[in-house]
Image 1 (cartoon, rainbow, N blue to C red):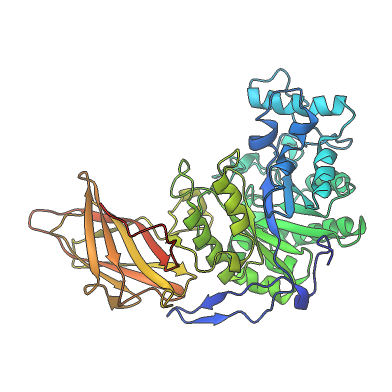
Image 2 (image 1 turned 180 degrees about the vertical axis):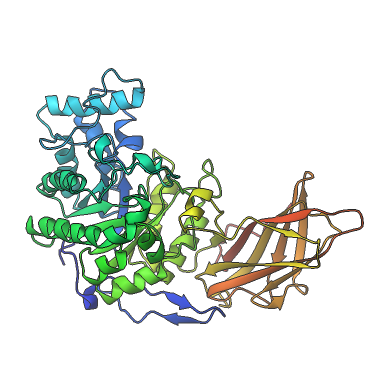
Amino acid sequence: MDRRQFLSAAALSTSLAGTTASATGTSQTASRQPARRPRKIYFNDARHHYLYAFEPPMTREDAHRPIDELASTAIDTFIYGVETGGGLFSDTKVGQRFGADGEPFDSPYYWRAHFNMQSLIDQGLDPLQVLIDRAHEHDMDFITSFRMGGGPSDPRYRIGVGGAGGGGGGPRENCQDFGRPEVRDSRFEWLEELASYPVEGIEFDFAFMPHYFKPHEIEANTGVLTDYVRRLSEMIRSKGKDRIVGARVFPSLEMNLALGLDVGAWLSERLVDYVAPLFYGYFLLDPDMPFESMAETAHAAGAEVFAVLQPYFMQHNEHATPAMIRAAAANFWAKGADALIVAPWFYWPFRDEEKSMLTDVGAPQDIQEKDKHYFVAPRQEDAAVLGYDHPLPLSLSKIAGPSTAKIPFYVADDTGSPRVERVRLQVRVDNLVTDDRLELKLNGQSLRGEIMRRTSHRYEYQWLDFELAGIRPHQGRNVLEVSLESRPPGLHGSISVVQLEILVEYALPHSGYTRPEML
């Protein structure tokens, strides 16, 4: 089967064995059957690990680096972010090239990016075409991603209404107003040129910035944007056989619709072949990203969901471990993802650890019976304001009687399997003292009978580390209930539940050259 043929029919769409879960954790195996192994996708934003990183002039070898560094991995689809709000990373004849109006540059990395591209153009090479050709030499599909909120910025067509930005797009008032035909038409011209390249697909990146209309005009313009996506899709598909049309969007259908993006209609009408849910600015791995309803809508129309794996754990200076990546990937498959996109900002240049990860995310079977580290991602205010909220951190106070909170989380593994050797629940609680009386229940069952180890960390917080033997998480959705029943005399104030993590370890045969751990 030609890998560049996008399988659009529902019966042929990529399907992954996974689960959907009820509130009690009962799971059901998805009814769709896989037609082929899912795509293995890497996204490169053109800048941080490429044009910003090398000193000009750029050699052909360095120009090939984004593709060549993936050649020894399982990646078969390369998505390239060709626009960043400052121009195109191509030898464009229609739009503006990145940095074309920036000289002299204040930023050394902007300077590198501009003159690296210029050095290739001086050699008679189009910086975009160089990568497309190299991808095809390595039998990779190439999808060009265009930031819809980027492109031409005309001060006459700004939204002009104050408000928080969110994502990566800056303040709302500076965003371009897609209610204006001039804004839509200028981007159409840029995309029409990009669609003329010999690529397998074009991706509309609507997720970089959340604001496309004046707040009071969102509802009236939602249909206008759907018509625009239809016009773009028809143009792109007219440029070549089996062209893929994709869209980067926000994590849930409800969040998108509130911003004027009727992603449900785009999918139902097959204006797009896939959607990639994420939230820019929230680069934290979220194993419970809420895209289930989006997946259901996509699959009903024969479209697909490519869920995005973010690189960081809890904060933006700590990379997620391989076990965390596996846990998030397992959840995404179970929630209905058809493929996973590895986002940039993972450790680079790639170590063996990253190369292994690029293989592990290829298909559900690649991570079966491998250890996983599940966790609840933290709340980030700009994401929460726009509808992408998280349950932690939360505070409990014993002022007017017991205080209780419920924390939902998702676990794709069957923790009751005899192949699972060990399951641990770890909860970090700030301001906790040993004399506080806490009650923890997992899916309604008290954990008082489970072995618990408590560790103190300076005077700020404690970790509660449960060895779960009799009570384990369901496969699918779970709820941890935490109740602060009392505090010791003389101690008021609140405690904060900051982290919740589930560690699943499998029992596999060991080498004859090893022994159990010893002190």
